[in-house]
Length: 475
Image (cartoon, rainbow, N blue to C red; front, side):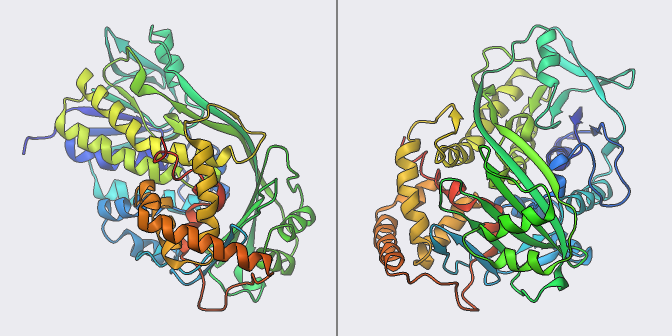
């Protein structure tokens, strides 16, 4: 094996940046992570991660990568207060009823976003001594020399590098910096969804509810969402979401009313039993994907990763897991190609487009279930949405369909697996049973011991996320 050479600068020390640093570090001599925020010594929310106060879950594909990069990480998280969530400890209502049990063979670790990021940062620095984090340091410019990026200008000085990786998030300025150097910004696909998030943090012992986590997704025109997950400190994080101007609660009383408007009252019962408190707010206008694979002329020595490349509607819970898959690709390309070469950039950009394509189509198709959504509609969206509505109903009566959907939503199986002949028969039969039961008024909360696999927590808006799953298959 060749001795690692070269320096990589990563802009941003959030989850995407930390995972990118871990993935690329075995293949280079030095990794410098430059972060604008002063990173806290304790796991608390920070300005650069405005969504960090709301519910988060790492999809299965991302969790598997974390455990591979940091062996024993799940057990370490438990020691820090994370809650292990098992497949029979979740209530998940969507598609008109409660999903059937669907244990897919892994355990989710539930904790707050600040706690997860803090633990990952500490583990990275302890395990990879070639990684350095410069916090409280803003990148003012990306330095281009000829046809290649050669570093960044930060805190009044030039920091040289063979490769710059932009992980600065949804509000990245990196492409504007490159535009000033003569490189046209890549084309973008964009969707307008106007999502409003509201979150309360509640003590877990404030109510008698003993299930581990809940996802509730409305079926009406507004498709309101509620999710409740346990985190460190014996607390619940309860997050609600609404789209396209639907009423969003601004105080605790309105928050409780919103919870009672959801299709099942597991969350509302916990909120009603808790003391009054503050409501955290967050909003995003939509999703945006930069088509770097189509850029005719991009500089060597620069790539983007995470939300800087593709900012999903966060309601789907895809962002962290997709960033982990992109980080793995970064490491693979770094092993095969010279850091500062045009070949490196081409290989990465083509590969990352393939990674992003499936979750982007899934999310876009889900967004277009709402008639007010505008923007770039992927081909096949309508057909996929109609079929997946059947899949969603089928999940309420068929464990086999529910399990396969869970694998797809966790990016552990191809969406095409939901359209095999055998699965098609199951979906049609199970969705018909679900419709018959609904017509007879037979839906009820699942009996204890018949709860849905918790990994579906990753899809905060379950029917919206899953409704696009076949868009790629139907192209």
